[in-house]
Length: 212
Image (cartoon, rainbow, N blue to C red; front, side, top):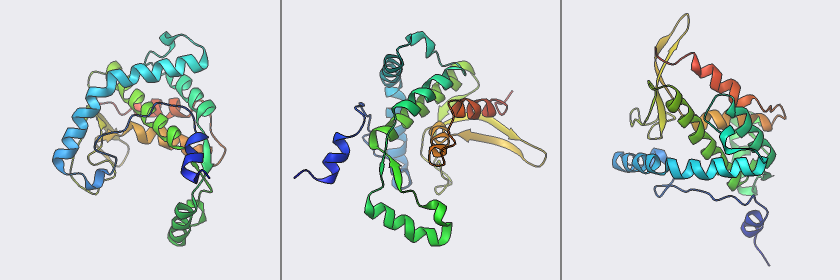
């Protein structure tokens, strides 16, 4: 009898995933591993973006020219994600851990469903596309990574630098993890408040923080 892992794979979206040879446990990466992972990440961008853009254009039956890294193309790629990504029941062992943590974070922390593996890797590609859009359109931005403070949420991950946050009380240089932008938009699916403009709206919001 097929086990649950096989059933999950068999029912998932057919999508060529790109897995880092260094994994995604950034917290436990050494500084050298983080540097090697970052070099690997930069090296695969052209090939990966060719696959992602081709797949997205094919699924939507549109010209590849529409995926030109413009702000407007964020609506197209998110429309594709919303129509392609799939959810599955959260495995029991993960659900039990969520319930344990709910005592601290509240029941809203519990998700009876989760994104499939392929859908999670789609988000990674969308994050890469978002990052490329920023740096191709705004030369003052660039890919980078940092290792300290070690417990900072984006430490050792590829980020975009060149942003400068400012409001009435705070100002200073900030970096953007573009994958978190895609993941933030995807969270709206849990509450059924998602929109095809979610990524676009977040993208535009960050434009005001590009350093002059």
